[in-house]
Length: 393
Image (cartoon, rainbow, N blue to C red; front, side):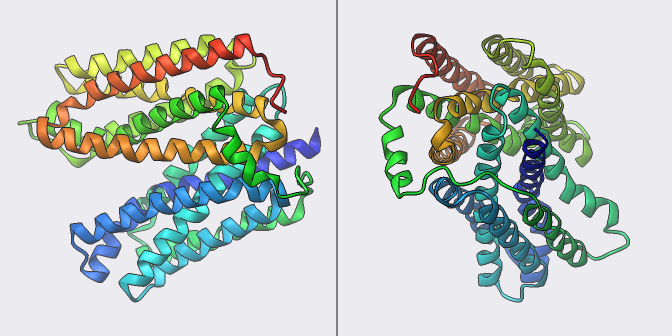
């Protein structure tokens, strides 16, 4: 048990670092724009490179960790992220900045998938609860970089702060080198073929599609909620930037706190009941946001949306970990690629919707996505009830 806890702590450190990755570009884009005179098109290119790197990293990690184990994958990905952050701090050309952003995304994609798979491996019998706890560290990491920049920017330059954060990856690297890790699960080259075989499993495919929609809803909330507050909630009113950012903090903070609560709740309450409550909370938040006459009620809606979105990923990933314990890395790799593809597709689609009909359609789009997710999750649960975890192993 002590060894499992040590390894789970390594997963938490890696997920914290992925949280830093996820908000890294948003934290430094003003610094980069000033240094290289970047316009919105150039910034847009960088914002596309980060998720592309995450997608490639998600595709790569699974077969590698199943074949060679977790230690060197986590160490290598952490060093790549650290090098990328150092590059952003010190880069002297636009192509180097682009390469660093892709590298940060790639390392982050590996860390995201590998830490989830590792936590699932170390948490048999309580996977949903431990994966929820893992998600809390993502929230801590996501707040770390902008928070550090906000607190220290009056004393140190942004370049120095980013460089120091990049150097801090040596902490998880040293920890991963110091503790024992479980051995590789597959000592042949079957992992690559397994990824394609998983797509023929109806439960896996339904779970992947459900996470694709879920990822899209999370992406919409992160990317569009501040614009919704500006264009709809506070339209025509005098407002400050912090009022807009508070909407995003409400979503992200509620999600982090809800996952902290779920770590205990899922050990006592059926995951099926939690899924129903999650869907209900998200729907309530979207409906309130559509009708909210004022700022306070809109903030409440943002809190409900964030709390409602918290449960689906850890619960569905726990199902996947239970179904495919001997090829968890490959299974998580494949399902994260599906989820990221859904994130990009739904966010791009809503961009067109917002351009044609206004950002006020955000709540409607959330409700439509939620309906699709609810149907898919119901099918997953029904199939699991008919085919308990037997495997598929």
